[in-house]
Length: 317
Image (cartoon, rainbow, N blue to C red; front, side, top):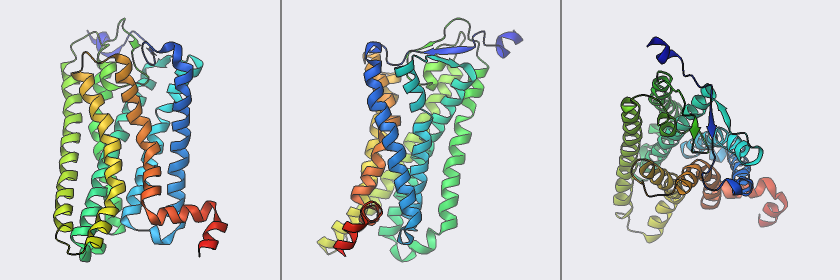
């Protein structure tokens, strides 16, 4: 019995990629590679821009910098293996390496959610209590909020690989997925996985419900404060500072929610559709976030133009 707990009997998993679309893997790898490169490039530009521009050394942009670093880590833990599957038929994944990828992916996703909550609080403080904004969101407080969000993710996801390591894996080793997702790995175990399933659902629901409730509360307070303003121009300006954050929330949570629901309740949803959505919510938000903030935030947009097109910036001045 002890052997069944300590030994898996399989040394690696076989990741199919996108079931039913194997013949198109070569072509699917092109947008994956493009998203990966754009995510790394875009988020690097955001980080460098914030670092070089003293006027951007504010809580809002510090959180954005954290989000950019987390997005780079998220795509780097996912895209290279996907490209290995799509382009080089590298379907085999060592058991422990698979668990490590699963751990990092889910940890970075929860950190992402925590940062979106922190950014919602930042907008609430800036719009609803502007006179106390500088004293509430000091640099040490911003750093602590980032660390608390990261620590929450690390501790919440840690039991997942530990619980999986206790399961016996005798013969099932084919994962119908493009990366090592928690429930996809759990389903292959040759034992009762009720604890694993219950814990996975509990973590996903608690994070999503709590974080979305905090974000919704922040924006209800923001809207109440904005509509109390007498000037239409002031209202537009206040809401304009939230536009990029709202876009990021929609881009991040919509495919994540769809993937979560279809994985557990969408029995009639084709596996290929589910996996495309599950992969897109790891690749698309990190790519889109820098574009959204670059377009919607004038300070970042102006600084980026100044970095890449100094002559144009000088002519405007």
